[in-house]
Structures are given as C-alpha cells and as structure tokens.
Amino acid sequence: MKAVLLGFILFAQGLTQTPADSGIITGTVRTSAGTPAAGVRVSATSRTANPPLNPSDATAEVSSSSLTQTDDQGRYRLENIPPGSYVIAAGRVALPTYYPGTLDLSKGTTVSVAVSAVVANIDITMDDASSRPPDSATDVSDVAGLTLPVQVRMEGDAKQPVFADGRSIMVRFTRTKDGAISESPLNASILNLPVPNSLPGYEYRVTIENLPGGYVVKSMIQDGVNLLNNTLKITAKHFVQAEIPVYGAALPGAMLDKVRIAYGAGGPMIPMEITLAGTNPGSAAGIRVRGKIPSGGNWELVLEGSSTILFADGSFECRGVKSGRHVVLLQDKLVTPARILGASIVVGETDLNDVMVEDIVVTPKEIQFPARMPSPGTIIPLASIRGRVSDAASRDPVLGGSVTFSGANRATFPIDSEGLFHIPGLLPGTYDLTVEGSRHAAVRQVVLIGDEDVNLNISAP
Image 1: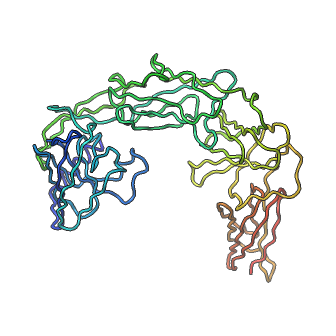
Image 2: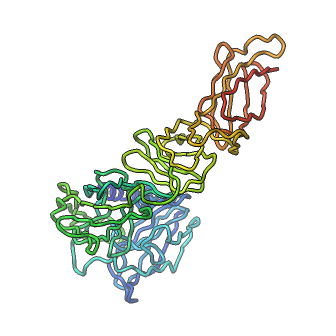
Image 3: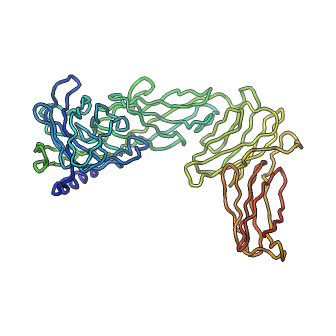
C-alpha cells in the first residue's frame, strides 16, 4: 500500500513537467464481453530491459509515467510520455490487465514511444478480475504479509524429507480465482509460510509437491478443515483494516475520489498441521549410503545413478547405489560463492553408513579415480596440495603472490612470506593450476589428484 501511495505522489509531482519531445498513447478499453469499459484507470509505466524473475518483483521494475481514465466510450489518452518502452495497464491497481489483455506482466506487450509520436489503437480487453464492482467508491489492495504457521508430523519411524531426486519439497498455494501459484520450501518441522496477495474471501488449494516415492500426505488440517479435499479460506478475521481517502482531482481524466481499504496482516493464523507417512528406511531393496551434513544451508544432493533424499534432521540417504567408487556431492546455492561439500567413497555389497562430508572449494574438471581400488566400505579422506614456490635462478622462496586452482569452478590461494601455499579438500580428478608470484612470470600446469596428498615444488622464472 505504501508503495502505491508513494508512486501516486511521485507521479503527481511529475505532472508539472511537459517535455517538448514527449509522446501520446491512445486506445480503448473493453470488458471481456466486448462493451466499453468506462471510468477505468489506465497507466503507462516505463519498463527496464530485464523482466522480473517472478510476479512479486514486478513492482520493482516499473515506474509510473502517465495516468488517465477512460471516457464513457472506453477511450483513453495518455499524454506527456517521454520516449521509451512502456507497459500499458488498465483496471485495479492491485490486479491490472496488461496490454493487450493479460493479468501476467511478463506476457504483456511492450509499447514503444518515439520522440513526439502519437501511438494509436493500443486497445485492451480487460480481464474481469481487473474490474471494480459498479458504483463502488472502494478499492482494495492485496496483502503480502499474511503468514501461515505450519507444523509437520511424521508417522512411525519415517523422517521428514526436504529434498529428493534434484527437487526441494514444496508447499504450493494455488489461488482458486485466477490460478496464481506460489510455493515455499517445506524444509523444517515448524515454520511460517507466506500466503501472498491475500484478501478476505480468497481461497487456495494447498498441495505438497515433490515428495519422494513411498511418501504420502495423510492429512492437512487447518482450523478444523482437512485441506486434502477442501480449500484454505482467507477471512476478515485474519486482517486489520484501515480506510485511506485517495483524491484524484489533479490527475488527467479527473479520476473520482474514493476510499482505499488498506488490509494489514493481523494476528497469526491458526497453524496448519501436516501429517506425512513414508516407507520404512530399511524395507526397500538396493544398497544405501547414509550420512550427515552440517546444520544450516539449503542443500542439494547428488550421487550419480542413485535416488537421493535429504531429511530435516540433517541426515541424507542415497538409495539403489551400485558397488564401486562414488562421489557424494552437496551444494548450497543460496550463498555466494556456492558452498560445496563432498565425500569420496567405495561401496560394496552392504549399506554404507556414517558418511561425513567435507568442504570442497574447487571441484575437478573431470572426476578420475585412481586405478587402485580401496576396500569396500571405505570413506576416503579428501586430498590436499601443499606447495612451495621458489625463484628459478636463486632457489629462494617467492615472497607473496597467489595460486589459482581451477576445475569446474575456481578459487585463489595466497603464497605466504616463505613461498608456501595450501589447497585443501580435493576430490580425485584433473585441475589447472596457475602460479603468479610477486615479480615473476606466471607458471601454469595441469595437476592430477588421486587419494593421496600432493607436494609441489614450483620454479617461477
């Protein structure tokens, strides 16, 4: 609401300027039935080059440039528009229809305005959701701050999955009036989930997405209602209300005075209780690899050729693992740079438990296992490099500089005052190493890492 009112004020201030090279946009607005839409708000907003990542970011990428209202024939005229690209919107501020007739900003057609140009026939077919009730002096805005407490319970000995086979477990809210979808990770047993763009009277279908095989939703109860076969209903009791007068006499088209109802999230909603059931971890066929990860993070898990599950308690399980050498990789992409954990393991004919993963700064260009095969059930410590950089002529240590180690990603490590450097936590495979010592030419070489630590002596010319 504050963003809407601020844009209103900034727009009104901008009306005092009338650039000589400004353009004009004209057209008509019609209802879905084809009749003229009279008294409808129409705006032109300048658009950045990059579209928003999701609809909730849309307000951040546009700024108002011109505003008017349709006449009794549904005609409008937007004036004083600087040259540029614009999105044309008609109807409610909270849920406008974008030219030529979509509620989705990303699907709207951009209109280009040249210097002193008149762009005509920008006709809009307004979605019913953008219309106000006839003769109403009240407008409302959706609320982004409504939250729903959630508690997850597991039946029996099953553990709560939070990530499975490359996808996070999600709670999906589908708004029944327009099919708008929002999702939040179900990554803990107790959490608060946003119910975005909510108003009294809205209803949502609630579903749990991406559960691994063998898991089912037994029940979802909120305020005594089982949401497996009913909708989540948003009512006035979830909000506090305030009336804000909005005066439009100074705007083009003499918009009518009206009252805007500002809805703010009230007290916490009654929690939604989700009950999940899963197969007994020991009941399915195939070799399993199990381990733990450090607390925190939003992890993704990969062990090639297997079905992977991360659980809310920080443990993981890889099912259907074949005998032989493997690498377990976890990545948290929500931090920059991405944090990577890994383990190098040998799987035999029985389950491998208690795998501990280590931090990995650089992953190899290509994983290459040594020819020697360790015993089945072995968890192999990650290798490291300890190196010394010396002057090629004097053999004295190079004082300062850096070592860049590259594979699928790269990282830079310092050379200390004794010419030494250390690169820890390396998986087996090939890497590129570049040494740039102080006042020395760069040295480049390919390094093959196995299961053992490596010592390097590098001469810098």
